[in-house]
Image: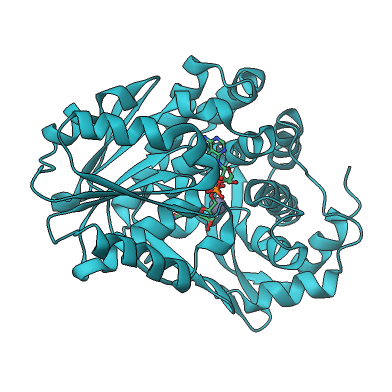
Length: 363
Ligand code: NAD
Ligand code: ZN
């Protein structure tokens, strides 16, 4: 499957398929990636174990000079220190302005390598090879960043890739928890945009969790398509792009309070989407917004309740640190129906607090 992210002169294709990495040489040539300058593949140690050698050897066979840099897996590699290490490798390998940086991995590697590509010599070309389900979200849209000890994703840029190569065969080695966590963002893309796709996700939960190739390709294609549609209408997050934050207001606060090991990103936003649905019903929207949302996440084995030991005050203060907050009102993405959301700039912080309390009692 193939789709285009429509961004005028910065438009780029997303290729999705089982085994498409075998065509990497042909696809690079087709998209004008020249052989005169070295390439740099950035990956993490888990991904490297399975896929680095095959990717590098396919590129070399195709006639590309290719260097690689392996970072430790995990969020801590999205740092300025690691950025500097990657740039050291880039310099030693002789990367120049015509070089391409390749992200081989999940969202961590994509964000890090993307920021290297955005900043090295004021910007070189960039290709994404996502190897997690969550990365169907992070690899589309051009947001790249590293973290500061005081704030996540605070040092970054918009830098669109030349292309995204999504080989579903790479997902087979992904741990089950990361599979479900990534599917949470796929469901989010349904919930904000497309009721029919949401129902398809629910009906195909077992196939998706079991990594059935046909189901995965369709689900990732649709997820990327929604993300691409939103991003092409609002590349720089002036307004519409904010709808991608459904479930993220509570979700980010939970991640900050729980630490990044207790809750994976997709797990935290699943709870956040159930919270948003509860809030929606309280605001007068139909009850099924909540019942359907909750039923879907249950079906995927994702959490729908806040762990009882987490402190409501701590969650609320983490939320206030979030940039979307002002005084007693919170900007909130509220689902008005399945497949539809509104950006509500006037949600009472007290109501959100009630919802957080209620989420601790959910099953
Ligand atoms: P990740 O990159 O840390 O990958 C999750 C885990 O799976 C890691 O341990 C990794 O080593 C391992 N892994 C990856 N691919 C594998 C494979 N095929 N087989 C076996 N193991 C594999 O995390 P993620 O969930 O992909 O992404 C999370 C990151 O994405 C966060 O840093 C988040 O901020 C970022 N993000 C960015 C955007 C964006 O628009 N730029 C959007 C959403 C999330
Ligand atoms: Zn997210």
